[in-house]
Image (cartoon, rainbow, N blue to C red):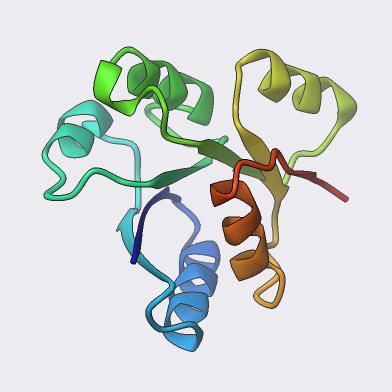
Length: 132
């Protein structure tokens, strides 16, 4: 089973991922951080290393960009795909996400029907820039 770490401060977005998990048993197990406080320590304390990391971009105290930097400085986490989840899909931000080396980007709100397929495609190595 796929281990997913999701860092998201919006309760509705967290609920969508929980619902998708319940509707697709055996596909993935999600660990959800509802804020980015002490992100590095919490990441390193996880019992299982995630196979995929989903980061909300606009968070405090650490933004998705800052959390990506924290992840990438740890050798054991360099190969994990990190996906940006954002409601801000302006061209300038998309370019910033690409420049920061996010693996993929999914715009919010998340579509419950498409989300499991996106996870499968990302884990198969595909880079997805799904924004609208």
